[in-house]
Figure 1 (tube, rainbow, N blue to C red):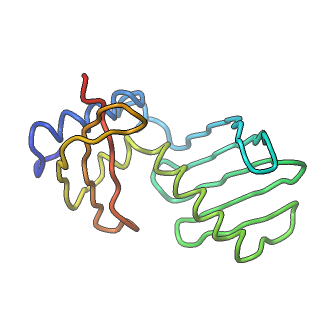
Figure 2 (spheres, rainbow, N blue to C red):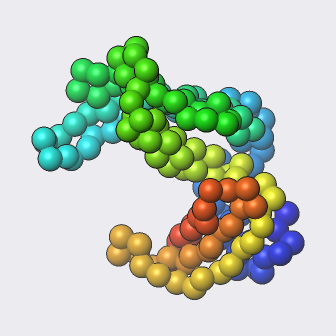
Length: 158
């Protein structure tokens, strides 16, 4: 699976896939739905956000529906373009930018096992670092058609 990687890189990638339920669990589902409640601490105080994520596991689409302080947001990506709706109306350019940011972050977070099994252009072990006070091992992962390099920090104590 990871012919271009060394043993340390393979160990960290396999650990990430197993922590996320294992590759078979992810491959056997065409659509992933995740419902989450977030408690955010923002300038105006504590904000509760209710989010429903619907993702095609083949990477062909993503829908994110959220409710925040009385407003309803629907962000989408059809595999080609991002779009946004706010309270049932087309979103502004800023809303579309927010859709791109939110979906990109969520897609990477929820689809990690799928992404790690795709053709990776380059894998590079970057040593250890500190993440939230914990010592971690860091990989630089570059996808041929991806928007940017991605980094994954694995728990180095395992």
